[in-house]
Image 1 (cartoon, chains in turn green, orange):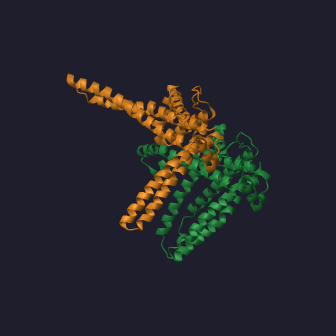
Image 2: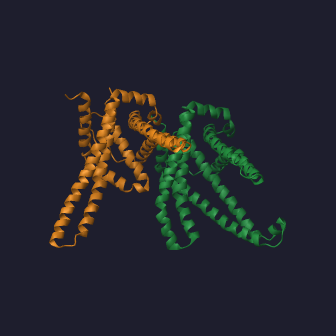
Image 3: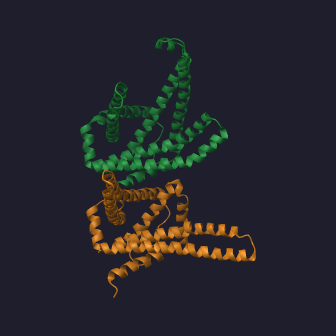
Length: 273
Length: 250
């Protein structure tokens, strides 16, 4: 291809090859959004009971929370985690298809395989993000001791950016070789980025991010009057959030996640070419 | 005596004026993008359409037989539009930053000195702005000519070479001419429509009719014509001229 941005173009077009698959993934995203809403609602309930409970020790206060609420939250969290794994597994297959240069979208048929791949995808993302998260938390802790010291927060943001830059290549590297270990072979990953060229790599990710921001901004402007209409029509915050999360999950989240992973896979293909 | 450079520029204008008037349907479609540009994505689509106009111009010849680009593959059009806008922002930010640096320096100087510094800063940033504008226009053409590779838009030495081959003076003259032609066409058309409706309104007033409606109608028709016909026409004209100017290098 003449230009590296053509991969972004291709990635934007790619989800339209099979609208049904986007919607199937969208259903999963919608369920996750609803579960998150339910967990939030239960959590508010728990916090309310917790704060109004008698007693001054933590154990005494927690003992007054109705166990059924805690069980519901835990159950919902587990279900949404499993669905998240399926989504991650699907993203794994999207990268796989991009690396194999297939133009159709992956199937949903093999749920067990999706779960397994999803676990790999999730673990790699988690491990790459764990260092910045620790630094961030440490920064918050330090700030509470001596205020006004924001340097650690800035460092953690930088770490987030660097780690996620590497993570994109690491995921594709793992998917291509189908070995979990390959995701942490930093030497190979950095070598592949160097093959592509750091400027090119950063440029294409930045470009993808700019395109994403523009799309999100435009969607926000389109959805604004719509949101206002629902708000006036239903007059209920929960209803509003529910309708918006259906729209968001069904069309936007699924499309964007397929788009991103397709581009990530394509970048890898360009690097190893 | 007319030099070759002058005829070249006139030929560019003539070709572009004819080219932009080739298909009124395309003008209306481009006008629809302009109308909905507050939704952001259509604005980028309009720029993407102009990307294609340049693409045809830089690969075409000065004969007026090139077709207008198609309205298809909207995602590609969108991406191309974003690329052009990015290049424009990147180039035009340079004079702004230079001007801001001068402003920042002048804050620390006393009043007379700071006025002088601001004045010098204005002059320098205007000169740099003109250079950046030229580099940006030719850079966009250079990028499109090389298959849309963003790095080519910032290949300063190649762009400088291209401008030198066309001639700095020719480039500046062409763009000055473009600005004048654009302003003249825009103001003359709106003036003609305004005059027609004023004539209607005045004659209606002399006949003793309430003429407020005619003025409002005139205003609306004026904006519609500007939005759907003159605006798209001028934008295609400008970008076509830019592309042809790029293809003038030997």
